[in-house]
Amino acid sequence: MRTVRSTAIVGIVLGSDSDLPIMKSAAELLDEWNVPYELTVASAHRTPHRAIQYAATAKQRGLQILIAAAGGAAHLPGVMAALTPLPVIGVPIKTSKLDGLDSLLSIAQMPDGIPVATVAINSAKNAALLACRILGIFQPRIASKMEKYRAHLKKSVESKAKRLDLEGYKKYLKRLS
Image 1 (tube, rainbow, N blue to C red):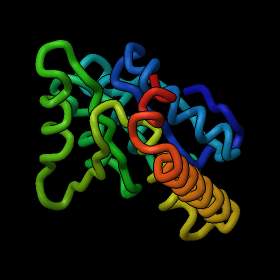
Image 2: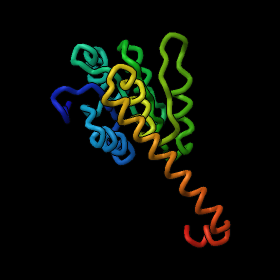
Image 3: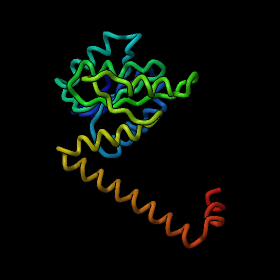
Image 4: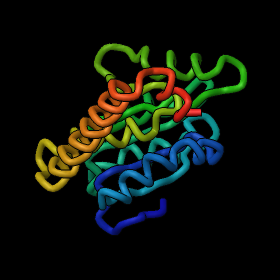
């Protein structure tokens, strides 16, 4: 496991290194917000002992939340949730066979008692944002970052609405092209 910061509180676990191009947006957001995390690969099927060890020791290593990404059968988030008391956010990865619907359903359809919060297919950034919302409950610095982020989103939408009102949709669409 590579610890990006020595006091990681978020663990990002990839089912395969091929998930990294999608999951980098989670790492980028955590980097931007200075939320310490670690990032690793642990396959539920190809390296089950590594996945088990990772999840079983996550809390004692100081992690507070896990983000687990997987495609296809997508068992990794469920395995993580079964082996740790920490909250787990699952990121279904788009696959070539079913466009990620298989991944989404595998992660979202967890049995009672083993919940996995599930974001949309390939929504790594939303997974990081959800992790920050959860962490922000007890960490004012992260909560402050979330409030600033939300204010930025609001300002952006209000600015676009104003421009659309002033220009009309035809001119606005030309600007988007």
